[in-house]
Length: 223
Image (cartoon, rainbow, N blue to C red; front, side, top):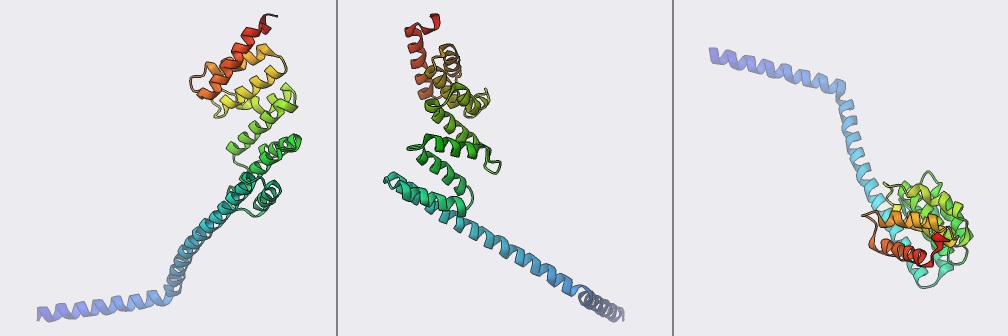
């Protein structure tokens, strides 16, 4: 009798649970389905976006390499056209890389135009800071031949701080500009800063030492 009672109670409880589940599903079923659909759609969207991103990045990378090949083969006009298209329609970092390469190609025949192009990149807030600094440094190197020390300094001196990632090249370009304009005391300061920095690349330090030796041998500092 006891067993029959227990069995009856279990059946009643199961029916109650079943009825409760039906009521819950009737009330919230559409919401649960909608939530599940959103999760699925979100997953599909994420996978789809990653596929699209990878495909677009790969396509832009191929276009960038093709433009570099054109430049290497001396097809400058075609390379500039390809880089210009990539600047406009490229994906990810490729548009700004195309801008940088275009400016470098321009420097071969139009220093002022290249300086303007690099300066524009350095002032573009949408460009990553590392690339903006690299563009500023490239402008400074071009200005060694065409500009004043103050113009070079305006581009490079802020990069020559002790913690700056580009400080070695920035110090070098400042020293070169000072040397070119016969400001040997200032040139010596920048070259000394390179020599005294234990992290200076060997090739940069060697050039700095060579110019320091020339300054010393010339007796310019004592004149």
